[in-house]
Length: 276
Image (tube, rainbow, N blue to C red; front, side, top):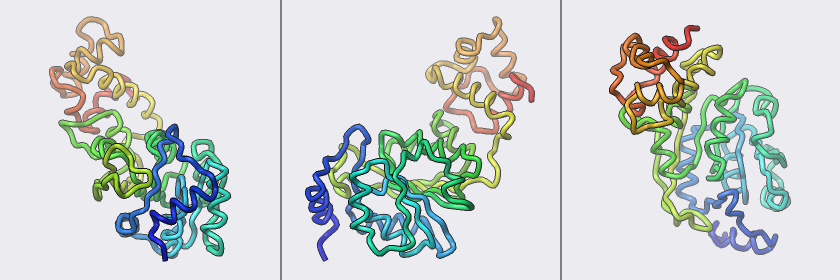
């Protein structure tokens, strides 16, 4: 049986497909990395999996061997045609030709589901947000992303970012493994990483408070090098001294910077500024 890298080259040439830099798509062709993804996903025959950007179908086939149902969402119609060949005979796989960002995951899965995917780098943040904010989020996500993005997602207080807060409100992320560029065709210019996100039973911020919460967090990170009292005053248009008083009322040192705050502190601050 040919190595996945050779098979990938053959399939791309046969279907006259050139990789789109706009979508940042790199095909995973390392069997060992596929095994790492599967081990982290911990699938059972009772699981429904949504895969974003199945590409050549190598991961899709592997998922189908362990999950009861795989829904592979592919935006590129040429890849959809190719998947018709590579997934021929795999009855548990449903290929959906669509842009995942325009599809309701809840309606797609029809019940509980997991997400396992080698995400297109250009839309990583948008895809994560789409699933995490869905009316029924996945129970677990195992995704391949750029290593730098993985480090931001899994950061702890002291190195937090807006992306870290945005993910960790909904679940607990863990960096599973780093992946070298040589695992892909074509090889990206940067290293990648597998991240597993276990969703909280309920988000840490109640839905009615989420808009105000993220308004405050976004304001804090709008000037990450500034102390919080200055960043908030500049972005939320406090009266003189108002940002300092709000931070002190929330029990937060006004001299701290946004990257040092834990989610509980942001929530306390949000409730101080915008009482629920």
